[in-house]
Length: 279
Picture 1: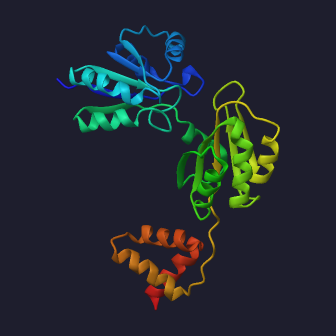
Picture 2 (picture 1 turned 30 degrees about the horizontal axis):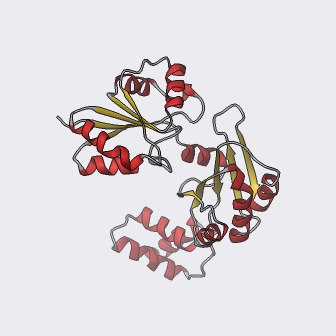
Picture 3 (picture 1 turned 90 degrees about the horizontal axis):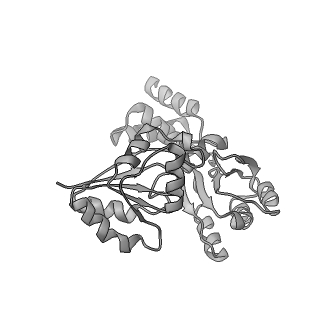
């Protein structure tokens, strides 16, 4: 009988944020693959969970060397619970290699979903969340970091980054240079923890604030590039919508696609479509 790999969402800071399913998964797993064994035992104590399974470390430096043993356990029908220090495994944390290997081996991969710093930061940032992209950690070296940011200059979606506290000021300064000093952003520090802080404002102002030093886990949210208005006649707008519909989109989705592509108000595009139908 093939086993099962379970990805568990660990709390960002407050143990009470996780539900009874994670408690059950921790108590019943045959193997617990964790980023830090000390944090696991602290979390188990906070949740009043008695661990019965074998505990193995699973962090960046041992990730690949641990794969054979974990795959063997799964092949023997065991349930393996994967936990990182905080949030969901695989999201800029160990886990992807095991998930991929388990899928390739025909093992069931499921989850006990839980907290996510990416989604939490987006929700409290005050920036648009209808479309976003996650960029993980920016490169440590200044030149590589600036190059990465330069490649995102035209990104229209809200962007989410993880960043080290001691590199935050430099990252904000480089982001201000790439995106413009007035681009809106939010620095989310120590989410859900006792000293949680969310700083919102232009990139330049946030860089100035961070220059004095910042501590804790950091998630950075940056607004997307503003849409540049496109000059199209009503007939041209109606033709753009018609082309989207011809490709299989519904009228609503076609109008939305043209709005996103042109940066024009929805009412402008909608009125152009109505005018074309009436003409």
